[in-house]
Length: 235
Image (cartoon, rainbow, N blue to C red; front, side, top):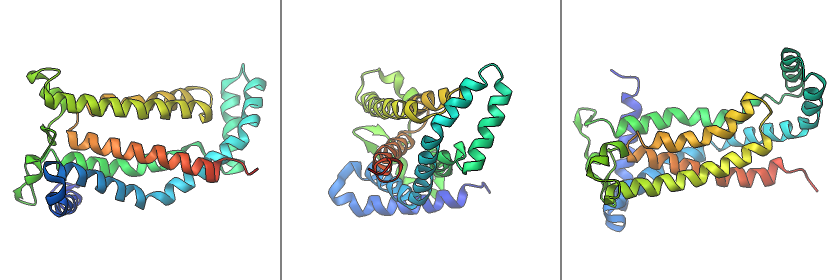
């Protein structure tokens, strides 16, 4: 028995139930819309983590002048700089990893969605969700597997549209990270990491790509709102 068997069964029941419920209105896109709704419900449940991360971001922004001063003072001693910076964050309760909590928390749910659309059977029954499509692209197929039909075939175009939307989100996230990320390797990783989502989406089922898109869009809106309400200093 796999660790994901029970979560996958629960996700299957929820997504299939929503797809059946909206089927008369949504038609062939019912399962795709159900995946997006499923993702938004999960992100709503994780909102407290996002609020905590935003407060941590505010603390890091407040400490930025002190961090920059340490960088100038210990520019020739990277080990001393690392120790002093870590001590500063610890004293202020502003750990850099705190801002990553929402991202870490949602990975198990992404893996559940991935497994759901890679499994021919769920709880011993045929996985009927694999028969669903979005504009002709199978939800259980990845882009690489569709390339044999042509780069600009209708199913491939669905993926290319998904990649374009994910790229727009990645550019937004990278530019935002450039304003708040610390200097050094951690900051560079924070700026580059969002683009990995676009590459990753080419190798996972379309359903998982929709999860990434819905979650990324939620993150963009969530950060814009929380940045204004929590991170931005009061006037």
